[in-house]
Length: 295
Image (cartoon, rainbow, N blue to C red; front, side, top):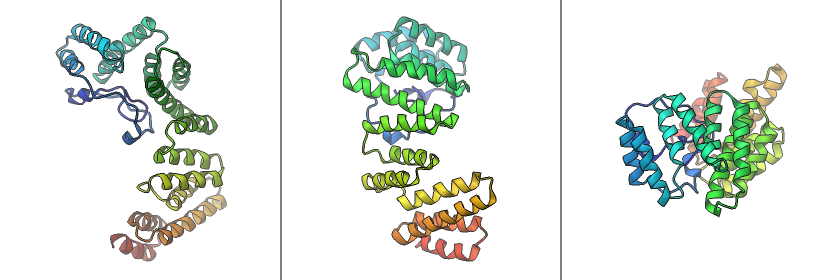
């Protein structure tokens, strides 16, 4: 089960569904980050999906219930069916099943997480946060082993990060990101997301510190200097004061220069700086960096 940023509560088998209309996922979680997701979809779930595609939802549900008895990591049967209904653009069926699932097991985080996802994607951020906050509390229930607890906490926190970000509440997002990193300290992409949040809070030195740590943990992510350049570039694009915007662009260029000099064998640093120069109509200078990128 994965949520808020990668395909939501969708089993591996769901990719084979005819032509559903999926809802847009919450932004954020790259696929490589999900270190605690359950095992691959069981054959019973795949069979249930086939029954669902044959308009045999009741039979699909019975098979899901049977399968769930032997697989505790499986998505709640009615939540799984709700996901398929939503993917098939039958939102009313999905909502009814979700409410039934929560009613039948009101202390299971999964129903609230899924309900929060539906609410978020319908623009009801407050409802999403209420559901996710309840889910986070229920993660502490003693019925969950360590792996299940971490899995539900992870999905819930990613959802809350998206909610806080959508409201522009970077302090709230920061708290949830730190919670995620406590359980996944070497997750470089997650740490870069925290750095972006800190930058938006104007804690620039702390943001750079997190970028340096992210790159130390995983050298395949963008170097710290390049990310700092992109942060300042983004800030310049939304700055309404002309003088402040110019100052942001100057800082962005300084970091681009540092990136290309520090990582002179990293083609992306040259390419990104070249693109920035082209957007600034500095075509002659851009050409030099394009040549370096190609090399």
